[in-house]
Length: 276
Ligand SMILES: [Zn+2]
Image 1 (tube, rainbow, N blue to C red):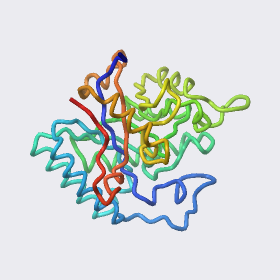
Image 2 (cartoon, rainbow, N blue to C red):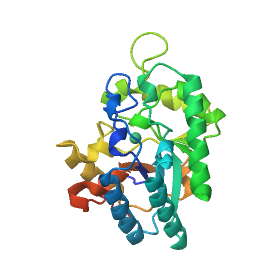
Image 3 (cartoon, rainbow, N blue to C red):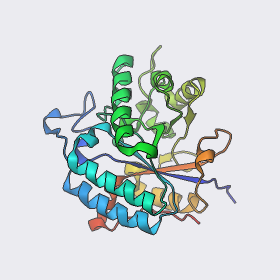
């Protein structure tokens, strides 16, 4: 039987207009539709997530937030309420960083100054609003990271990154190689994180890692069947403690989904977990 590892549950807070087709991508974005408010789907998602969280209060969950969301009063209130309630019920919500503007950095060439400023702005606004729930943990917007970003994460005092989707057919998303042709590949990112003393927590994939199993893969036609069954199989174990998540010698299984997923199926969707 395959060995199972403790589970780390993570959520990205993207609203509908954070999708690369609207903003943050050099070739895919149509910037006309960008607005910084909150969608009805997000309101419903918050409501449903609250319910799920209350029913699963013992499960530690990390939400990777986008800094600019906290410029929206309505989003801010919903988040504050969620954290307050979680603290009252002894819940275990922690908050990491998903960038300030959800720019897909790896799709552009290296921009060290731009990325540094983005991280500083995001950290400042997120820490200010979530106080003790803050953790210096990063997930790259757009889901992909490039090696040049590792050193900047270290300089900005991040201790953990969770942006690698270790499937071979998505290696093209690891950014253009700085030397020669082709792409960096996940190994070179892993190495860059290691050199920068940042713990890397890649996501769960299916079949020796062939297909993605997290984020959009949970809902993508055909892929979703493999993704859902992989979650059920590999999350049939206990949750990871924060000490385990931060110990690079301990293997864990990292899964991620989107906050907006809770609005799917008329608000009835819940993550396909089997945690004991
Ligand atoms: Zn995102």
